[in-house]
Amino acid sequence: MTEADALLHVVDLSHPAWIGQIQSVMGILSQMPTIPGPILLVFNKVDRVSSKALERAKDEYPQAAFISAVEGFGLTTLRQRLLQLVDYVTKG
Image (cartoon, rainbow, N blue to C red; front, top):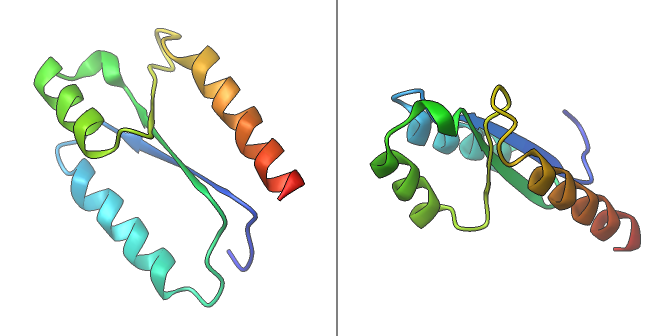
């Protein structure tokens, strides 16, 4: 990636190392010569985790979107958030 107006960062919440994965991606992004614009963090597979894990993610990343692609949960909200992100980027 050399340039980005925005970034959609999808995280598998059912993976046991999801926190470390987020940290790794953010670390890589911080080392890049061009930092992307706004980042929309999306947690997928919320249907496959405990309520405790889901609450932890919501507490640590309250601005994130939470979805289950398989179950269709949260996709309308994700679509709205993506439209807002595109609108923000294009109107700057």
